[in-house]
Image (cartoon, helix red, strand yellow):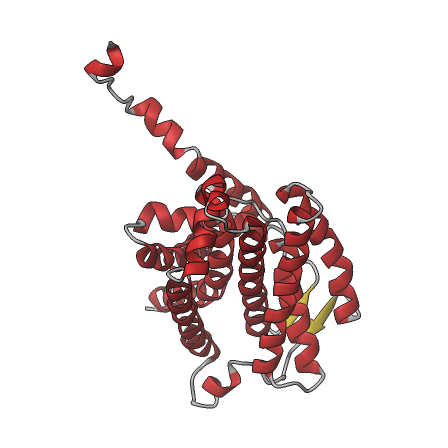
Amino acid sequence: MKWVKRMLDILLGAISLGLLWAVMTIGVFITYRILDIADLTVEGSIAMGAAIAARGITAGMNPYAATALALLGGMAAGLCTGLLHTQLKIPALLSGILTMIALWSVNLHIMGKANISLLRMETVYTVFENMRMNKTSAIITLGLIFVLAVISILYWFFGTEIGSAIRATGSNPHMVRAQGINTDITIILGLVLSNGLVAVSGALIAQSQSYADVQMGTGAIVIGLASVIIGEVLFGRKNFYIHLISLALGAVTYRIIIALVLKLGMPANDLKLFTAITVAIALSLPVLQQHIHPRKKSWKEVD
């Protein structure tokens, strides 16, 4: 029974953390899948969200207001990347790297030091803890609310005219420009929206673990990509709404996998290597499947 209880605790802990990272995963999806951009700003904006929320809470700000402020900070980071890429014509990958590097210093200035403790501070989870929930249950409850709200809002937004233009920009920018739409604006909007969500995720994670650290964004882009790919492979993407749900499930599944791998004895130092290998295998699946099950040529192709 003790073993079952221990496994249940590990599972619930992984689910709670996965729901918070799901918000970041959806942000990564916007740039990686919709805009077709590998945006490394994520590694700086997730730490920025944590830094802003932590600094605000320790200064006496309402935790929900501090989280909203983190959203604005992440959106500003995305705006910087968007302007570097669209106005200064710096390649998207390099623009993200430049912003990420700049955010390291910005985050240190925001916090005033490398990390901030939130122990015994009021957080967004305190309301649920006051309802006699334990911390894990409070995180799962609020995480689920946030994820469902984000999915619903994005499903509505990407069905609007401007949202459809952003989706079309990643698929066929030449066609979008031919329709008279300014693709610079749609790219900037996508980056702003993406990094805003990533920063909110950082704020929620910092409050769940009771501290913010300037290095917490290291490897975030790989974790986001792993969650996106796991979600798409395991849960599918029949339509846009299902696709968004699969991203959240992918983030939770990734965290469960990591928790189980650690339980089986993998050294924590090898987690980044494990994640990188997982992403590499997942990204190469189409090529591997083609080699394992080569597509037969039709008679037209033979001719």
